Length: 557
Image (cartoon, rainbow, N blue to C red; front, side, top):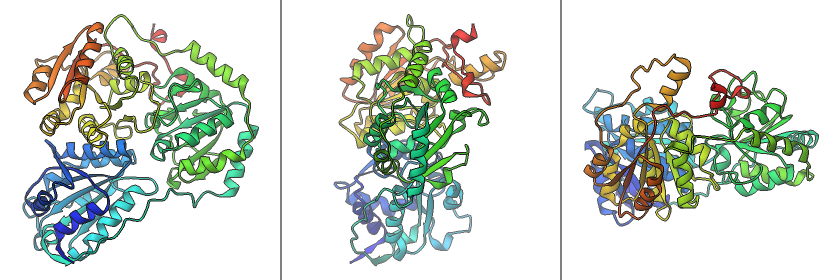
């Protein structure tokens, strides 16, 4: 049948099973929005307060549901406002399709009003991008974009469509999307055999789980593998929930703010089995000192990650769940009781601890876990509160912690929480923010209120840029250059002014009732938690040091 470009775009989104998009209209994308209006019963559009919020919402929707998130923006500044959100998705391998519209073909390349080369700008931060100048290529481009975004190692794809292509007429026929098949074609028998030999020889194995295990939904396969190898488990920030944080073999997070038990255990092990992790600098510390006593096996869907940051002794390329399903049956049941007992001793000797007599970030996270029964989706911004959320909430399933790990995007959380709640309306969704991060995109509270999206915003408010101040305290002789936010901003009044509920909490005993009120509120709700400005995240590894050099508050004394 004959359709115009905007109609083709909407039909292609329906083909792909898209039920929600996040965006902000403008002149170049008006034709698309006119068509969206006609299909409002099939595709829900969430009008965000800013295009960056739309990109983060699409990201949060994708992480929470496992589906491709979609965001829309117009040309020029509308398109550039998506960039931070696209880069966030790129760094964390999140499947997002960003659709922008540009000026018409006759105006392209002439510095026309609101013209920008968004494909050129986003080339380094997308898995792939396209510019559609001709309506006859539009449908195939949209289909390719969704397949690229979701297949292999996921990531964001941008489609820029000239305005003429949204209005011109072309033939359209429905095409059923091809299923996305997890990558197993690169799993080689000789690599499996090499891994099996290394596992059999190991006396002190440690298993390190990254975000790839979450993306591949490998929890079942991972559980069976851990039981067969009988090894302690640690994870990265992005790997939270792939392995149950309540399991006795779990040792906490690895790296700069990881537990001493995990850091010292990995530093002592003789085999490190890494599943879906890219050896970020925040995990490894000094790479020359990282797991230097160990042979290393790396399992990853992306061959480019092998030997990129850490040289490994054996690599297995493929989807994490598929690799583990192939590897586990080849391994005899292992017994590492003595090694596990040693690591248990580290956990007992170096537990996470904090001042339990005052309201603090760790206390807030433990109370959120207790009140929600550990069943909430936790979203975070970036900084101290993010690390406390990683340390003190026990994640038991994948897609339960949504956070900007690679890019470290302040302002990510509220938009992502809106996306997560939209995709998983049956779940309690709580965004944990520092006051500095909350300021970045607090306008999205208006989005949540207007759209009836019931998210809970917990502000861990220390009136400073907490993580930067922590570094200034420890390494810059307390020169607090522009990190103090002691001003007259009243976040409860801000919340109420944007259409949300709000309450301030300054004592431990008031937090649980405030959270209960938020859980029973009719719309979005803000809890402003005032904590001490000098609370710190421990343990900590100084930049460039070995992870075995992690120190805590006792060491500081």
